[in-house]
Amino acid sequence: MIPIAKPLIGEEEKRAVLEVLESGMLAQGPRVQTFEEAFAPYCGVKYAIATSSGTTALHITLLAHGIGPGDEVITTPFTFIASANSILYVGARPIFVDIDYATFNIRPDQIEAAITPRTRAIMPVHLFGLPADMQPIMEIAERYGLIVIEDACQAHGAEYNGKRVGSFGTGCFSFYPTKNITSGEGGMITTNDEYIAEKCRTIRQHGMRRRYYHDELGFNFRMTDVHAAIGLSQLAKLEQFNARRIANARYLSEHLKGVVTPIVPEGRRHVFHQYTIRIPDGRRDMVMEALKERGIGTAVFYPVPTHQQKFYRDLGYDQTLPEAEKAAQEVLSLPVHPGLSSTDLKMIVEAINEVCARV
Image 1 (cartoon, helix red, strand yellow):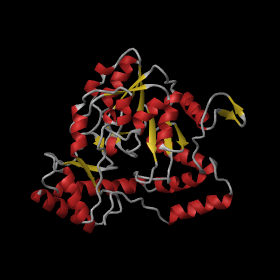
Image 2 (cartoon, one colour):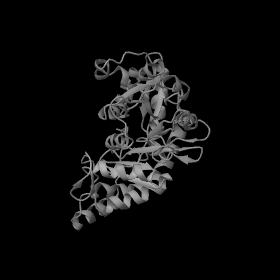
Image 3 (cartoon, one colour):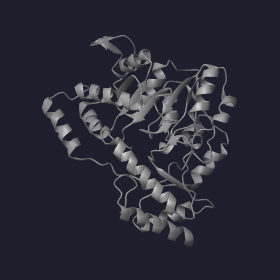
Image 4 (cartoon, helix red, strand yellow):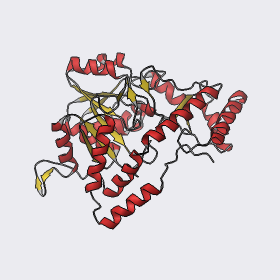
């Protein structure tokens, strides 16, 4: 079986975890700080704040920016539900804008029409590892005085015009096991704003700036040193992992037939958290099942756009976003992870081409 995702954990990660366990300092200790100090310059920012997950990174960031009840945040409906849910957590309302057919990312040319007097922020998602079109998004944000919160949970090391994601606005990353690097579970916030950085640190630790002095309502959203030790070891390998993902994606795009392969717009570095093709004309599920029979793992990210999820319909969301809805019916993600061998890649290509020709 060729899995859709496979975290690569080596001896370095194992040794790092054992060192932490032997030290006795397990919860948000020196390894967390070292991980933060390494991740910030990697992203090209001054500050990085480690958290317990990508979702809590988004939650903390919204709170740190003062977003709450009565506010609106413009985002995409075609992403993992945590993006929109984090907006609900703070009492604000997600406002969905449709996606671009080719990139799966939010369409900047539709953002402006969605702005109201209640709009406080734009939350683009760098989906599947491809940066959103940040130049027009930042221009709109500046024109209307809006905050930009980058959901970069799938885009570690991705770049837009030579600048790494997570450095345009306030960035949020995930280290879930399927991501380009993992800490087992965890997240990271990136920013150049000293006030926001300090606010995030306070919120993640029960509102404490000094131990046992609680200045505001906070949460236990801390990262452990065990997770940070894994993350540090993985960060040292991130560029190697990304290079292999990009090479694997190039091979697939050069050899696949009968499907719509991903595009990489000029000036963007796609790090292929997922390699997502389109299979139109209602053939997607048949192809998926046929690949499963051949031992090739696939997945649909995402079968239901957020605005069509039952929970959101119950909240009163009733809009048509045709590109997001079409994508949900056509997308299929194939293995692209750095653990693939050349034999694996050939098997994937041969199976896809044979199945699509037949189906």
